[in-house]
Length: 90
Image (cartoon, rainbow, N blue to C red; front, side, top):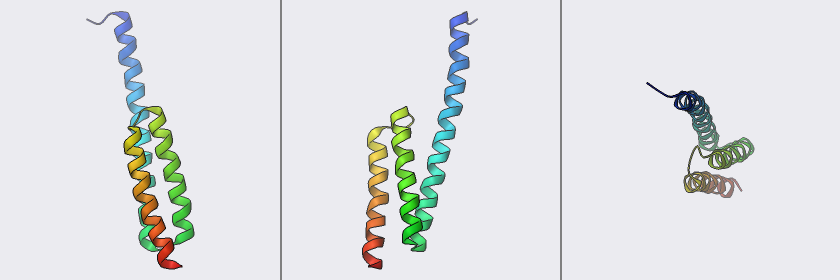
């Protein structure tokens, strides 16, 4: 049997879990969109998606959904691919 405060934590944890799951799903979708734009070779579209993806990763890291190093690593990988695409098209 849970005490009253434990029941409150169970409810709060369920809300946090749902919120974090939504943020992670949004991250994965943004990453997939950026990768697709990079693969297509569309520089302007890729730049827009990469900028949005980096922002989402920063926000997720600040909220504790993912670790800061993970966010930085993912942003670095995306930017490296974007820079290669820009150099290739120039």
